[in-house]
Amino acid sequence: MKKLYALCLVTLLAVLVDVVLFHSTTANAQQNTGNYQVVRVVNLNGTSFPLTGTVVGFSCVDNQNAVYCYAVTKQ
Image (cartoon, rainbow, N blue to C red):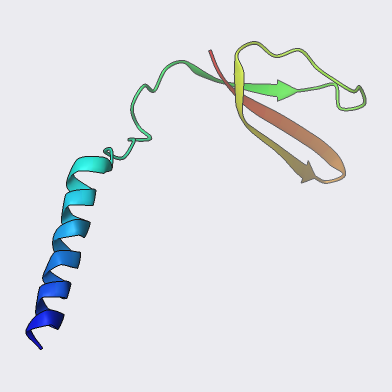
């Protein structure tokens, strides 16, 4: 029975050491809230459309047989 307790203790210590030493902190999604811009995408029939920055989101809405699309870009 003492061997089982010792094994459990060693395992617990190994997990704690792993968490403390080898895992980095989590990233905060609210950091670096730089310049974001919502852009309406008008040309839906073409194969591409010009956007500046990095696209971080895209959405389309169907409203009474009209489709409206928007892109969110990070400048």
